[in-house]
Image 1 (cartoon, rainbow, N blue to C red):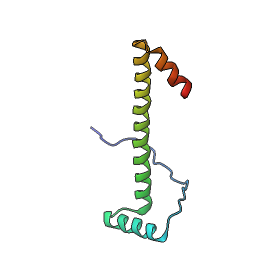
Image 2: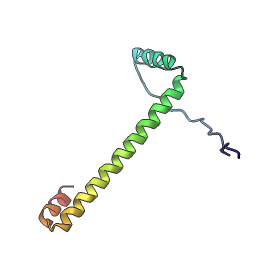
Image 3: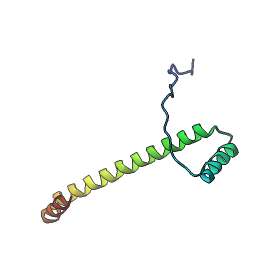
Image 4: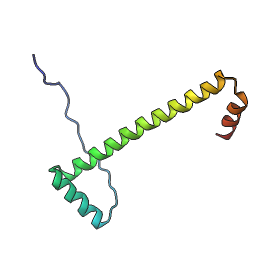
Length: 88
């Protein structure tokens, strides 16, 4: 049994630049050092975690809105449904 995956190494050759104060940079580098992780890897990990978290939140939000609109339609609250559709 071979548990190794046949995956291609990700080529990370594109840069993202953010502007921070010297104090913010120093704090970030200190935090990375305390964790024993490369600051670039830490920044990438934080970015990906936040993106995933927001994607999930947006998905839940959309599902909730869709469910509420279906509820209004099913309960024949057409006036409220029209009000929401006209406001948005």
